[in-house]
Image (cartoon, rainbow, N blue to C red; front, side):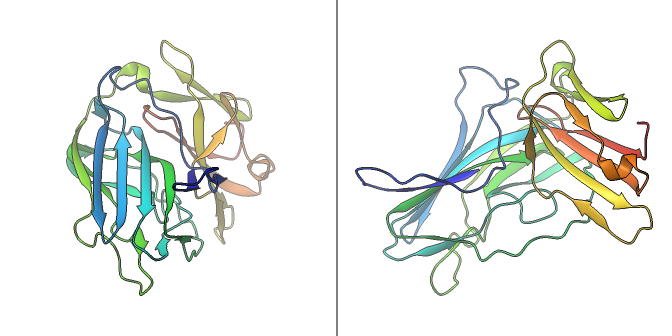
Length: 261
């Protein structure tokens, strides 16, 4: 999700542009300060924050980022943002060490985008989720190519705002999403508590290996059950891969061939 508003206006304009985020996870310490980073370059200011730790391997980490344009001219902001195999979010996680949490490489087509034009005096606020796939010392950093000026030159080139975090390899048992086959659906459970609001990515591969269909962003769903694609039930496809996440919880991964599950 990211929103636009005009600075110093009597009635700020707020526009909903895309959904790719989630609420803060209860896994993080209550009362602790968020992790933040900020910077400015040629009149463009950016800042982002993540909830306080501890952080753990496989977690889907919620991030809020803001970019404000006081450069005197319009700038182009990369977007709309996507996740997994495409452009990623405005903030990326890098570095770390084994053990890792391997996510499926989804062979998805990335839609082209010329980006959003951000006028002088405007801001964009983005809310995203970032998977933590490496342990140890990990760096959260703004994407190098997030914003460009009218000549196509990037802001913050080589010196984007960043902040280090430490990712624990052991996941608390009450922060693990579990997928349980339930007829022609999957039930999602969590040990010792209610299931949080869920986000899902799907991939269905055609039976003759001629193609595939995938969602390219984390999509919010209602409830705790995920139905198998109708094409899988009809035997027209060979495999269905589903990634299920929630802010502050480890991503669950399941791959199924036809039905029953």
